[in-house]
Length: 305
Length: 278
Image (cartoon, rainbow over all chains, first blue to last red; front, side):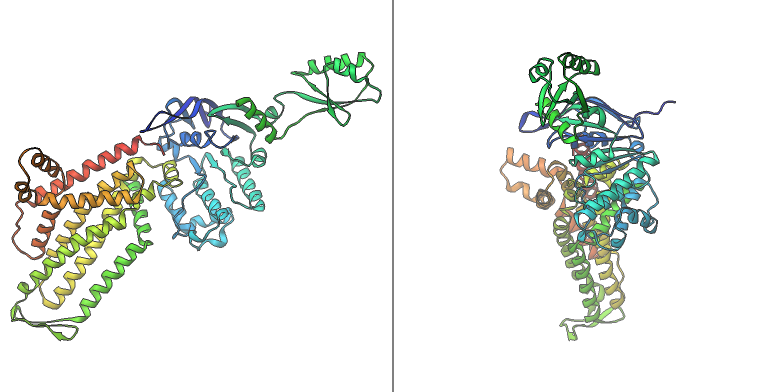
């Protein structure tokens, strides 16, 4: 029997309607996405792109206006499916007067897991707040709260981890710890769905990335695919190359003695090179342009606009 | 049922850390302790020979001790009924809005918990809280007077439980209102509105002739028909506490009315909860 994807969305549309607004606000528009189990998927996009709405749809917290979503092969509202999900919301509300073991025991009870506070101590240690084991949550910093929320998401070793801004408020060293922890979860076989504004984090953790803008998934693929979605090379020629001939060959100056070649495939690149060499230009260096995620996102936003 | 119970227990744990409930527990304990230590009753053959409060003799003729206790229990029943409802409405108004607050409700709904279980657990938790306060306060009072006078009665305890049941009906309205507008002030306002309307509903028979015949009278009769008879239940509780014959005709029908009112509103709340996005 084949393993169902961790997440499968098709034609997902969500419109928030209110009593006083007839039109409603479109949060998602025909979104389709498949995330295989055991992978790390990152969702990025500007504020208001629909990322949080999409996550809420995955959890059955909001219902789609049209289309459908299946999580771990089942309905997200099915409690058996939700028992296999660990979720960290962007702003987790925590009871101020409780201690971390008390909070985790409460979550464990609702998950149907053993809720003996002592049994939860290793998990609290694992997320790096062992020193605050008996302190009230009300006195916690934002980063400590985030770590406790992460511990709650990790309770019961879920198959699917949905994390909304997991490193928000955590210091740089703490982020490294969280990345290590998430890598351990991935190694265990869990699927990771990450929503983060921190592009560098997403880049480091995820092997597939989706860019959401205006409620639509405008780009989706591996990091490599996204970085090279439009093929661009930088070329350097031996001194003496005729600039007019290079321009005629379809190349463009890129500054500092470099020339740029935009081509859809290697054949296009080589054709441009052949034209330049026929005019006597000698190639001494070819570099493929690799953009960072920030550039990819900026480019995608341009596409979306 | 285990999940409903877990939600209810979490609510009790949360209540235990709230100043309102700590204050209530301290006030009840201090009140009962002060009464227990300062009140002395000398009972001879079922008659109250002397009563001292803070060492000072209280004037009065010798009378049967149970006769002496009746007005005390009646007054205590009224105070605990109306005082308890007002306190409950204020102190519990934040539970449902807090449960539905951003960052909490998404997390709760991501767990293997059904929406109706969250609603039922919250209601059960508040009901348990009301019953615990009623048993602690009225039970303590019964215990103190029982030990000092030798008269043991279930009356005050039953009266306090009637107050708890009435509060549960009002809380059903507060809980449901929170699912339409997540705001503690709105929740409290709805509780007070039904509290006052319920007092009027309890006296609907005597109030109806005061209204002009026609639409206003019919509207009053129609609206009050659906409401819990808060004042009638308070009177019934006071009668039971004082071991007096019930003036209200049917306690069972009053309780049935409260039950139907509460259940109807909870059903509306459950429907709204199922429909709503968070």
